[in-house]
Every structure is written in C-alpha cells, then in structure tokens.
Length: 306
Image 1 (cartoon, rainbow, N blue to C red):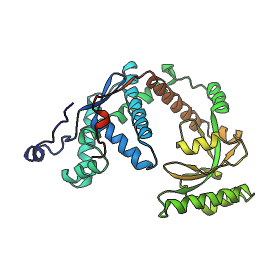
Image 2: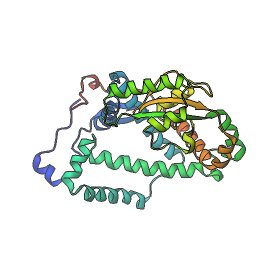
Image 3: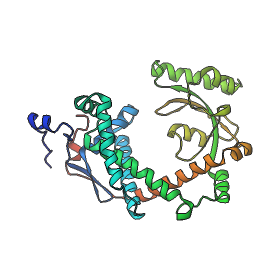
Image 4: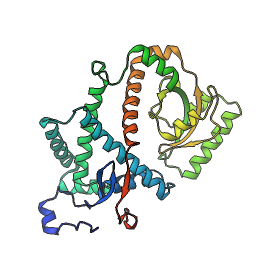
C-alpha cells in the first residue's frame, strides 16, 4: 500500500486549509475504512495521556475510540438523524472563526499539527460533535420512546447503577514530579487509613476544582475517568479504597459513600440526564461489539509517531 505524498510547496501555499496528511486506509472497522491520519490522532493522544501504555494498549484504545465514532454515525443513520444545510454551514463558520482566533491560516495549521490534526479531521470531528448533540436530543425525548426515562425507571436505576464517592486528587499538572505526586498520594492514603478525618484531608490536599457540595460525587458507569470509577467499584460503601488510583487527571485517594436520598431528591433531574447519557453510550458500545477489525497489510510496518 503506497502512502499519499505531500502536496508540492506551491500547491500547499494555495491550498493552506486542505489536509496534507496521509489518507491511506490502515484499518477497516465495522466495514468502514479508517485513514492513517485518523488512527494516528487517537494513537498519539492516548500516548500523550499515559506514557506507560504499551503498544497493544495504545492500539486497543485507538480502535475503541474509532469504533465509538463509527457507531455514532451508524446509530444516527438508523434513526434518520443527520445534519441539515445550516448545520453543515456552521462547520465552515467554526473553522473560519478558529483561523481568526489563531491569528491566521499558518498559525491555525500549526495548532492543528501540534494536536495531531489535519483540517479535514478537525472539520470531521466538529461535525460529529454536532451530530452527536442532535442525536442525543432526539433519542432523549420521551415521546420518541427510545430511552425509557420515566421517574420510576430512573429511580430504580439510581439504586442499582449509581455510586457516590469523595476523593483527594493530586493532579499531574500541579508542577511537581510524578514521583513526588505519587509519594504524596500514598502518604495521604496511609493517613486516611489510620483514621484521619477524610474531609480534613480533602480540604488540605485535594487539587480537585470540580468537587460538588460536601465533596461528594454522584455518578453512574462511564461518567467519570476510568481510574477513579474502578477505585470506587472496588471499594465497599463507607470504606476507603485500599490503593491509590491513577488516571489521566492525577492520583486519586477515594472513599465510597452511601447514596443519600435527600441529595437524590434535590438533584433528580441531573441524575436523570446522567442515566440517559449512559443508556445512549451503552447503545453505541453494544453496536461496537459487533464490529470486526482488520489491519491493512502494511499496518505493522507503519510509524504513527511521524
């Protein structure tokens, strides 16, 4: 399989906003072709997220993300939901605004390259975001009877599939080394396990800027970062997780809390929204499980770090 060559310099100057990446097909997922640029975008972003990921883990995460994107497209088609002319025009408007925001075409192109993007991918991802918002809105409507979300259904689901937890978060981007952050988190865990007041430890050490009232998060599966969610599910109600969890956000010291009926009553609509979002994502994930993934004959010889 031959790679697509870069455009000549003169032509590139004329077509500054055109994608100049590799458009060759490197994978087929669920019968849909996946380009070099698309796979490389996910591969490199996951690599930047966690340098400890193995090549196999990077590949699987990239494939999972691509599969979810393809599932979105297929799900939208099944519901006859698509972007109209005005919505498609808004993609062009968004790109023009981005170019202006960066101070010109060259700066825009440099920003794309820094984030492992091409103009084509940038446009595609934004249009997919619009499509997802439109599809969610359509599927969430109770009158369409796609996601059942009456009070009784949601109440039952909250009891079965929602969790509550507090945490002390030591962020990766706090200016300290990873070794120091990990050591700090492990020391906090020891202090919590030795009986120190968990709320006091949160107040003193946590770098979580999004904690809710009384530091408690209420959430359902797939709503929080993976490391935090696993730590909560591994922990009994009222207990502190036995290990320091790690995610792309940082190091988490977690205490699982009981569900509070008063909180549920006061935030029922927010929890309903989280329930509907999980149902939507579960439908996408179920669709991905039917996808077959095939590598191109040259896949294993390609360098996605270029």
